[in-house]
Image 1: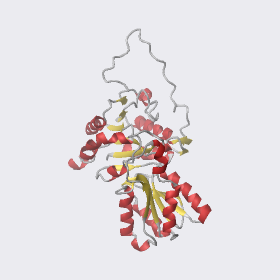
Image 2: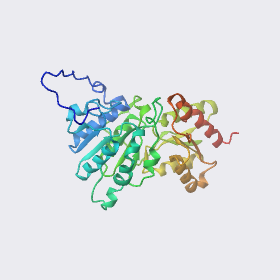
Image 3: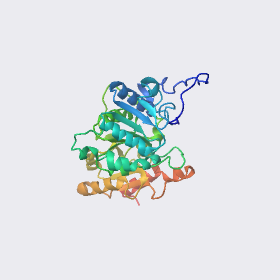
Image 4: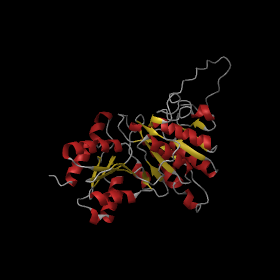
Length: 354
């Protein structure tokens, strides 16, 4: 990481040759990885609005740990894409101050587990500033956080923090599952006058999918039916959408069951109407997320489905989740994360199988 007090190159210093950017040669239309879609969204937002600033640990010279921000400093200069000290509370605090002055900051928290030092700034100030000013001051801050597990990372590098942010009034919380959603959710987030927590599923970074930057994608607060079905509604988001789709294929092949997959895309605001329409059709609901079961996002959603859709349900609302333990070491990760087997166990119960 660049040091704050690093001296500039002096005469006679050996200057390293510039690296060839990893993302520059990749296509930005058609089938692209999610990481490319996010990079393109940042590039386009910065090109369209001089107020947009990207900053965080290692985002400029290195291009980010996952190379999501590669080429931005080179294109827009280090006054608009710059490295910061290793201090997450300061990163968010600076973003709040910049937003008050009319900038549109897009800070990066390098990993999900590193967001906790910034918790007070996010919850006490970022989320509440628009209300404190009766809406007179926009808080147009989008915090990008590589999130969730599935990459075999070390401690503090794989966490499911979405419940903290979704519980905090004043924050929008979005989770893409496809490259196209990654692009458009980020563009909508940066354009929003409200603060947005943008959770990037790390294990999906290099998964390819269609990207169309010309046709505006669905806005924040709108869910998507990723797979139509008639027997059980599976509600999930982010990295587990693909897992749910694989489980749905197994369910169809082995039992002839038809699972409908609802990708929430946005946790706050929540598109409950799409969930309700799907549950009204299937009569059964299973919610799937990586975080711990107790007080996880699925708990609130299950309560709401039970309260508001009671007469549509033919079985209790079930949850396939992580466990109520600290996130495990990398070797145990696959046992901790919910997979197709855990989801299909819930589906079997919902279908009334012993």
